[in-house]
Figure (tube, rainbow, N blue to C red):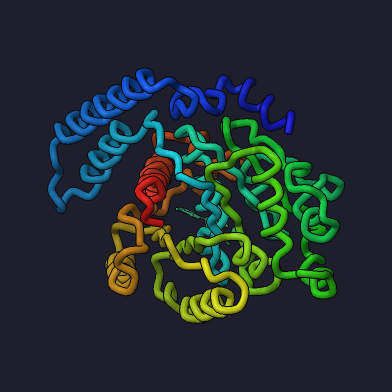
Length: 345
Ligand code: ADP
Ligand code: MG
């Protein structure tokens, strides 16, 4: 636990219970803070509205204008806290659709906007740990120890050096064996759920817990779906995007029926959107038609900066915060936080 607190102090982040959320404020301070936030929001909206609209025939100008609007509306805005911690499992059994990229960047965007966030890396490849710059060589205490040996979750959590309020339970190569080792253990499907519940009661009040799943529907993914009440599906805007989705939805229904009645798909994010192709637009339209409520308004464009960031052990949110990829993830995270605070999750 000390590690978690130290990280916040080093990064100069607000302590829990002080600004921007002010849980411990007296009513006058609290009212003043709300008024200031509303005035700030109104200023941002007015500025954003003043940006001239570009014609649809000039995609580059449109992108620049959209980025400028997002920068003004979102950068430095404090996102609202959910009433209770939200646990989201980022799942899609297809590989390479943007699960890990989405997990780490949404997590970083929420944390940068004042929320306490934990990423649980549940993929033996450990890509989320790498992207967050978290040490995850073979000897590091990891989520494997939590699942297989019952080590308390907070004992393996490490702070992210580049983003305050962001923490990660890393995955090491050991996790590759967990899928098989779990089979013979007691309560094999609910071990992660118990670990998270114990961590929340034991102390650190995370606002968001995001679980990055491997590209399969095995016991690790089942643990993630028993631990969460929300499934967050990234969908890549390409031809086979919807293939395999029905299998994922069937599995979610099975887990809901047998193991976790609260489980539901709350959020879908379209990723790697390429505005120059008709295919991307067609896939996006089709997904929105099937899931009108779940799909976020924001889609994430294909962007070199997004794919470069992990090799520097950073999310794009710090690697290049004004890039279109970072601004899209910030906008998507804002939508998620607003829905959560409005009780629409
Ligand atoms: P998954 O976790 O589903 O396997 P990843 O998040 O690892 O998928 O993404 C697969 C690959 O696509 C990675 O190399 C990643 O850097 C790249 N990628 C993801 N999102 C974007 C994007 N918006 N623009 C460009 N490349 C992306
Ligand atoms: Mg991944």
